[in-house]
Length: 310
Image 1 (tube, rainbow, N blue to C red):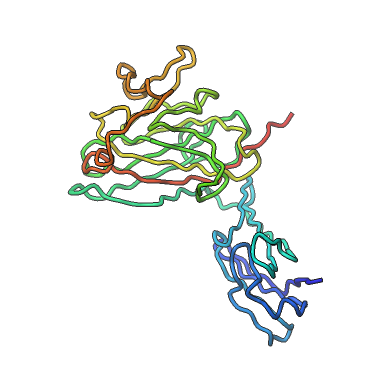
Image 2 (cartoon, rainbow, N blue to C red):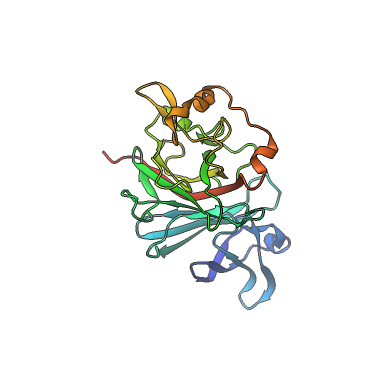
């Protein structure tokens, strides 16, 4: 039976360096089938003093490391696998890897944008997202939220010298993965070009704006993927505040009235009436034209939603 023996491990917050020694001869004949998560060995030697050795040197954000955050610690978990046959065949041997660090003061879940852009003739725009604390005075101190509690998600765009812009969240979904693929299981939050559909079954809502260039989604922690890492995938749009329509809007669901309302002007709530059917866009050019709008896809997380203790 194949066995891995840990010789030494060097760790720091951004990187992990593992040196492991294996003793099974069947593995030395095919070292390319050794994996740390999704990563191959950085180096393999059959001639070391300890015998056959595989070295792995990768960042903790690589190789499919699973990250969990508590109030005190950041925990990274993975597995070292020997997989003599390709997937879907299971590995013949697995060795767990777990790295625990003190949580740095002020650490918050990361915001990652999948693209950047500029509005022609106006210069660059800087987008940001963050999770706020309960009174919206600063970043949250934890990314762990009990079911039913609220997660204030702030998004903003730095206008600099631009014409006034309105920031909109056209679409947001939750998933347990940093990337979304066609078969990825997702939980819809905002759909249909700005309709906060999660607000129909929860108390999630867009909060009143303090500035057109920022928006706060007060999201109620939901049961999807309880106890797992959850990522919030959003499509942000910086838009002309004087050109709201069915395709460019932010709509809350008013449970008392049983109808949709436009966040920025309740008197124009007719643009939200399509939220229960299909909100039509006005063509690709309408979204991408400058200087009216700029689209950016982003990911916020990971977050963890937990059961409420009895």
